[in-house]
Image (tube, rainbow, N blue to C red):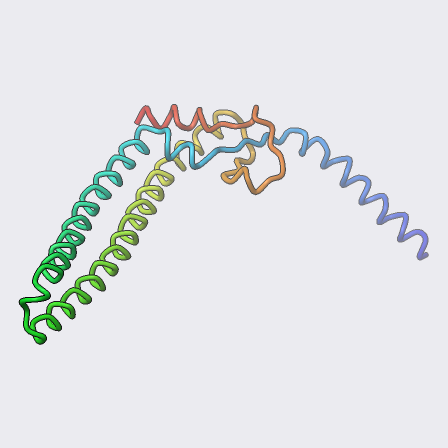
Length: 171
């Protein structure tokens, strides 16, 4: 009885493998390079310009803050001899506050730029997702991998990134 059961289970496993082989053989896998889509698509290039513009604006703000700190330092150095102790102490405290505020500003600006960059990447990927589905259907793909680095090896022939960029650029 036990032997018949083992034979029956073995037969089922073998049948499953035999039947699954054609299904696996018919599967078509592709992958995309998300970073390439973000950097090379028209919408990605526009987004990069937006981030670059934001960076320039924020860098101007930082330069202004740094210049105010340098001006106060210069005033302190030149006027040390003629300033009263109270005035010197007040200006030194003001300088320390300005330096702290500048450091906070640097941190805030860095966060703002990173947040803006993430938002734009998400927006690009949302638009690319619909295109990806269209390209995948057209090419009869059963699976598209979005992170090729997560897999040990992928044949470059199954990279559909350029097709997705081409379709995305049409929009």
